[in-house]
Length: 269
Length: 269
DNA sequence: TAGTGGTCTAGACCACAGG
DNA sequence: CTGTGGTCTAGACCACTAC
Image (tube, rainbow over all chains, first blue to last red; front, side):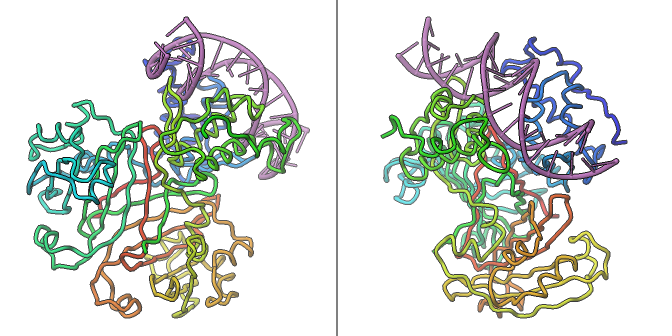
């Protein structure tokens, strides 16, 4: 079983030099995809040894660079572990999610096989208070667009979503029917490209508003996820505050001594 | 200021070929450390352009490989962003923490300038129940060593810590005074090497026990961090459940389109 | 058009694991 | 000892940005 899987991905795109796509040759992605596939499909189980690097070089008719880069990717994803002199091995799997899934509730929901829903509480253009302005990197009083929605999974309310955008981005939000689904998708289609995001996760008691919307008593525990999203130049595109009912979602993250995860735990006082 | 900083790190270890340390030449770490330093010290501020890769090659008398690897590291740490044709730029900083800080409360606490404390509730060798056995990858009924402690920062109680170890590891825990500080450090000194860990973060209401220890009312919100730690062969070394008072700690994580973070959000039902 | 980063090649030496 | 992964060199072509 673990002997000699066939690289289905490679054959079609093989020949180096004959660049395959617009972004340049992506051998390393082909190799990573192939291995990721083998792991996720169970063809390679936790504890199994991966093919050696030289073996992979041969199978994909490529040099060691792309193969090593693919291994580095899988290592960063927490799928495998490597060490000098030893074959790399498959670890217990904690599936990573795509960047899109982590930014869009709608998309994430669909990915888990649930049906996302939303009920818009209100949407407004309004002047920013000092705290929000600081988060968005604008001047207090500058206009922002805010959208508060109650989100549901399979018709069960699970989260109160509070989104805030600087006007430049908010323009596109105002031109959008907030009851129709994924804002993130709409923004992408409008040319707003989120490049990276920072999330802060903690627990809070439900405010009066939270409590009413989620149908719990005031002060009961909620998982709060605050997010700031940026474009590739570091300009803030969004500041949000999502509060989930406990027992509906959790965050899972892996870190290893070799490749520290971009995660930090912080003291709050 | 951003013109021509001097690579203090490089000069002493320069000459390739003349291997610098036991683990092989580590030019890429020298380059990464140099840049990280420049960023963290404020020598390079958010928005500033990094030196070009060729420039760095010259300064460190090295080839492009190590320099590119260093850049990849900083990218994974969320410190910089890169794109074709453009100089890489420094992002708004969200400091990453070392692996050790994420595993050891004691060490993390000290890193933030607070004084860690602990009050041991009980420590025992006992048979594992089925759920715990599954988490530790052992057979139900196999002995485990458990340690429950109330942890504090600057003498304020902040967290209830419940640690469970398979006997092989637990032996070392039993030979340790749990009121004396960092178990993690003790384990390391005993030759137990944690290679990677998986954390799951969510919010829960305080149990009766939690509530009494942390002096809150039952059901009030707590941030729960469950952790499983493994050695490099994937053998489970620890299963733990930490519950923090809200407002004491938060988790911050960065992700970017280019290098997805090893994080996933999961539905719980 | 020059400079830059993204990708790849084809070699090389080393440290360590395992037979 | 052989095989493995970790590291490095010194070239190359391409796509894109900024001038």
